[in-house]
Image 1 (cartoon, rainbow, N blue to C red):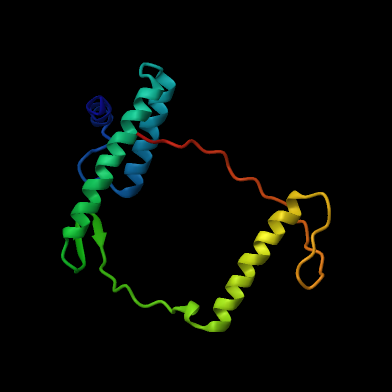
Image 2 (cartoon, rainbow, N blue to C red):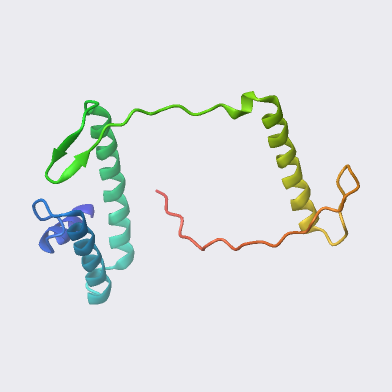
Length: 145
C-alpha cells in the first residue's frame, strides 16, 4: 500500500532531484491538496500510507544521522552543522530551589482541588486557594499502529 502513495508522489514530482526545502514543502502541499480534491484515492488509505512512510523514513533518517561523523557537511543542498551539547545547571541540587519546586507542586494540587469543588478551599496558612480558569486544548487525532 505504501508503494502506491510513493508512486503517486513520484508522478507528481514531489521527490524530484534536489529541490529546495521550499519547493519540497510547496510540492508536497499541492500533492496533498490534489489527492483530497480529485477524490480518486481513499483519503483514509492515503493517510495510513503516509503515516507508515513517515515512520519508516523517520527511522532511516535517525539511524543514518547517528552513524554520521561529528563534523559539518553540505550535500545536495542539505547542510549539517555539528554542535557540542553544552551543559545545563542542576538547579535541583540547591535545597531552596528544590523546596520551592515541591511547594509549587503542592500548590498546583491544591488549585486543582479548589477549582473542582464548589466550597472554598484553604491552604495550611488559612489562605483561600484561588479557583482558576481553564484553557481548552486543541482537539487532535491520535494515530497508532
